[in-house]
Length: 458
Ligand code: SF4
Ligand code: SF4
Image (cartoon, rainbow, N blue to C red):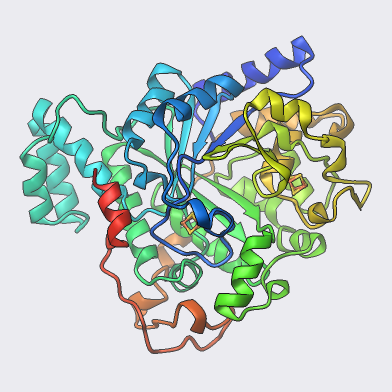
C-alpha cells in the first residue's frame, strides 16, 4: 500500500467521526514548531526570518505535548527551525507517538539524523549486541558510518533510561530536499547538505525507519530535475514524498532583497505558474509514492478549484497558535488556544474563491497547508461525484514500484562532480547553466553552527 493501512485507517476514522458529528472545523495535522533555531539559512525560508528575534527561544516540553491534545489532530508534523536541535526532541517524539498514539512526521534538514540514529543504535547495543553488530557491518561497508562512530556505539547509551529516536510504524523522518545536489545545496546555501541527506536516508532505511521527503517548488525549479530526484529516491526505497508550491513570505522576500540582492518576483510562483509547473502531477502520482490526495493534485494541475481550510492544519509555536495559517500571520497573529483561534479568526476573509482572492496575500497561494485538507476532508463545496472513491483507491492502492531509471541519474551533480558554487549573497540563479567553479564552503558532512550543534547533541 502507498501508506500503511493502520495509519490510513486511523486518519479516515478520525475524519469520518467528525463528519458524522457535523463538526464545522477541526484539525487534521498539527504543525508543531518547538523552536525556530536552525543550522542552515535556506533561501526563501520564512521561518528563520519571521521569527528572527526569538531564535534562541524554545517551547517548554509540556506545552509541546499539550498542543496535539488540545487540537486532537491525528498527525503531528514536528518542524521548526530544525527540530533535531530541540533539546528534548526524543521525549517529545516519544510522548506524541507512544503516549498519545499519534502519527509523527519529523521534518528535518537531515544534518543531525545520523547522530540521532547512532544514539538509537547505542541503546540497542546494550540489549541486542548481535543485531547492532550486523548493522555496523553493513553501515561501515556502505561507508555510512566510520569505525570511530562504531566504537562509540559499542560503548552503549550515555543514559539507558533516556528516550531515543527509534523506528516506529507511525514515525517518519521527513527530509527537506528541493532538488539534486547542485540545486539543493544552492537553495540551502551550503555545500555538502544534499550528500549528508542521502547518507542519512540510506542509513535510516537499513535501520528500519520510514523515510519521506518534502519538496518546495519555486519559479526557478526545473520540474524535470524533480522528476529525476523522485526516480533516484525511489531506488533508495524512500517511502513517500510531499510536494508543495512555494509561498512568497513577506519576511523571506525582504531578506532576499537585502541579503541576497535577488528579486522575489523571480523566485516565487503565481497561480498560473504553479499550474504550469504541476501540469504532470497527476501522472507523477501514479509513478511515485506521493503523499496527499488526487483531488489536491488536480487542484495544483489547474483541473479544479478548492477553497482554503487553513484551520485544519494549525501551527503552534513559541508565540502561540498562529493565525490564520502556517504561512501568513495576521494582525493579532498568535492565539492562546486552538479554540480561541478557531473562534476569533475571520476565516471568511481568506483563500481564493471563484478566482477572487479574499485577501491579497492569498492570491498566489496553493499550498498544502490551506488546500490539501479541503481535499482530504471532502468539503461539500469542493466535492465532485467520485472524489471519495478516487481518494480511497489512491491511498489504499499499491505503492508504485521504482522504474529502474533512478540508477542512471547523476544525483551528485554539484560539489560531488566538482561543480561547486557560490552560496549566500553571491549565489548565481538556480537555472544558471554554468555553475560557478569556485567554492566558498565545503562543510564537513555533519558540521553545523557551534551553538546549534551543541544544542542538538544534548
Ligand atoms: S532547514 Fe528548514 S527551517 Fe532551516 S533554514 Fe532551511 S527551510 Fe528554514
Ligand atoms: S490561501 Fe494560503 S495564505 Fe491564504 S489563508 Fe489559506 S493557506 Fe493561508
